[in-house]
Amino acid sequence: MSATAWDDRSAPDGRAGTEPVVPLEQSRGRALPSIDVDGVSASYRVRIDAKDIRSDVRRLLGRDDPGGRIIPALRNVSFHVPKGSVLAVIGRNGAGKSTLCRVITGILPPDSGRVTVRGRLNLLSPGIGFSPALTGRENISLGGLAAGLSPERLAEVADDIGEFAQLAGYLDMPMHSYSSGMRMRLASSIAVFLDPEILLIDEALTGGDAAFQQHIAERTALLTGQGRTIVLVTHGLSSVKLMATEALWLHQGQVADFGDPEQVVSKYMRYCRLESIGFSDI
Amino acid sequence: MSTVTQYSDVEYVFEPHSSTMPDIRLYLKALWDRRQFMDALAHAEMRSERSRTVLGNLWGILNPLFNAAIYYFLYTVLRPGTNHAFLPVLITNFFLFGLTMSALLEGGSSIKRGKSLMLNSTFPRALLPLTSIYKNLRAFVPAVGVLLVVFPLAGGTVGPGLFALPLMFTIQIVMNIGIALGVSAYEVVVPDGHNVVQYANRILLFATPVIYPVTLLPDAARAVLQFQPLYPVFASYQAILGGGMPSPGLVALSAVWAGVLLVVGGRFFLRREREFALHL
Image (tube, rainbow over all chains, first blue to last red; front, side, top):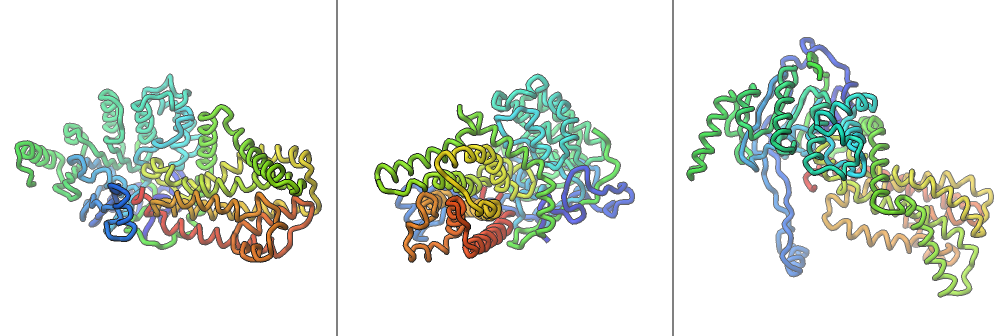
């Protein structure tokens, strides 16, 4: 059965805070992981522009490739994330980390395999793509409503989000007056305030300066001890060792290693050192 | 933030895309649950449009009035002898046709415009074209006030057919929803789709009795245009705005076309929805 994130089996509306909740100990899914990724492959299409009008005609006549190239981003990836654990996903740029996040959230369908997510899932980066004409506060409301939160709950947390995003004085100003860093900070802050059971944080999307990155890292560290399942896509290897209970190293869309964070990070660092001197085989 | 001691009993399963239809009942419920988001998004888009121009949403009223003025000029100055009684119908037609034009152009590009939102959030994607329809309906409310003043000033009169107006308007909106759903999915999966849609919009303007009275059409043209979904709707509007009653045949044909467009457009959208992210 295929599904989308709003189309789950037990709580059709997928609405945060409205599903029937059961104590963790009594849950039918107690022994089941929060996230099961079984043999997942995923790809995306990249359009390549034609060089000139002659190429356009050749494409039209079917003599040339129609211009789309399929890029395999994930290849037969399998792993499980137990409830309450923190999984760090590491790897070079282009390894498939962000694609993995999009597949887990149901935004991108896999080509093969199956992903099962048990629990309320956060949005990858809610708030991104909203209206620059609206104030920061109104954008918080829009991001939260898209995630299914009630307007009342959003009114309660808006100030906290603004404060966390270090935008307290700007919250009632239109977003077009924000710098790109301020916009990204707000978007990232909404994500950590949605009170999800499963939180996906892609540091590539969090933006902000070093101080704010540290701020987010501290917040994430705080969340790790609260029973949430967290998937953290990061390049900060020290935070992996500090916070993660498991680590996944993705390399060219495949699982290079999975398991104890210390060991996975050591292997990854060894690979990076070897690669820097010209040896790139894992 | 509170500590999680219990997990919701929800389960999401994501498997490879197949062109199967989702459960319509669940889909409609998910849409209904996000109605506040739709309202807020429509509000945001209207505000965004206002912020980009000096006259803002007033353009929603000025555009059809200017269009009507241009075509009236063509009729009265360049082609003297035209029936002047058509002016109030012409003005009203432009307001009403504007809704379908927005469904086609704005609703049609809604998924592509919402790319960033689509790639970072999970919600039923039909919300985007539906928001476009809803936003234009909201913007249409002040236009109704303008029409109530301009229509009689331009010499328009209405008869008992006025009672059929809400029915025809509902049929047109259902048609618009089908158009917006189908075209928005089409524009995502077909890279050149938007270019084709722009031409389709111009062809529709001339193939629909918006800028000319139906009575000017020869019988053969009328017979052919029956196969154009907007023809029976606007032929009915003309009958109502001319003080008469629309023929039951035209009303029935409009309803059938609206149903067909909603089912075809809706099915196409729902079958392709899960692959949108691949194309964007």
